Image (tube, rainbow, N blue to C red; front, side):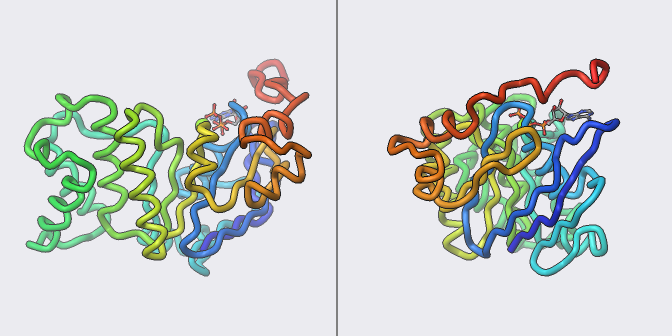
Length: 252
Ligand SMILES: Nc1ncnc2c1ncn2[C@@H]1O[C@H](COP(=O)(O)OP(=O)(O)OP(=O)(O)O)[C@@H](O)[C@H]1O
Ligand SMILES: [Mg+2]
């Protein structure tokens, strides 16, 4: 369960995220859409606890992130938009390092979990290879293994499909669906309206830091007065407001 209450981030007077309120139920896959510069990554980074909000609250599984950061982080898996890995480690070494950050014991069951995840993400042959020899999409999948290592109840994911080939994207979509089926809540930003349409049960559109629409795809269709695909709905709902919001701070 995720609840964002009046969540706000101000950068030198500029309201990148401007009082957003959202509630996402357990086991749901929630799509967070919006134009470039709308505030998606800023929101997600606050939810993952890597950026402090200026105002507002983030409640995850009934815990307030500001008051109980370590317990909240234990139940969250975060996949950032740019995968961060230690290139000089082998895949399994990196996963053991991440396991240490989550205080997971280095037992047989951890080794088993690591091989299971590597297999799941089709990296089974690559565990002992240095990460520097992985392609971008492989690094992306390794970071996903790392985010799932501690069996999080909430997954917070920023543009997971970028850099994945169609097979990798299919794999990841299926994994997210399985995770949600097992009760994990998935909060995912994406520019792929196809992905959103296929996997997200509910969607919010953020523009200029504010939520301009939320609900199921059919609710959004009704709001936009468009009977087409999600791309047409998105374009209609966000039309008229371009990148004016996202100008350099020096020109404010
Ligand atoms: N560290 C920062 N300092 C100042 N402004 C920032 C900072 N990080 C982001 N911004 C601004 O905040 C706004 C929201 O950026 P954010 O990265 O959250 O957008 P986004 O919705 O993730 O966009 P994209 O689709 O391009 O990934 C933008 O106008 C951006 O210029
Ligand atoms: Mg972003």
